[in-house]
Length: 66
Picture (cartoon, rainbow, N blue to C red):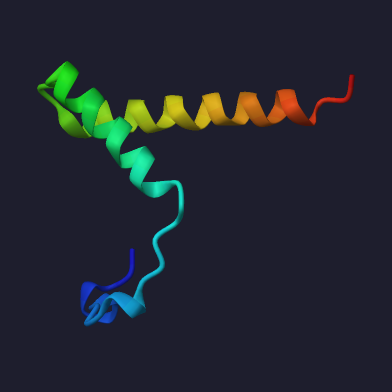
């Protein structure tokens, strides 16, 4: 990760929020609240790994010729 001092933001114009980020964070937050994990880091790692696998399967399915 980059040094925090190098990444200081002083205005909204300095950042570009990916279009899908708000929905990803909303869904992730709901799952954390629903599950109330005792180890949020481990839960988060598993959550995002599963999300990545599902996304990859979806892309593979779309890309596969019929």
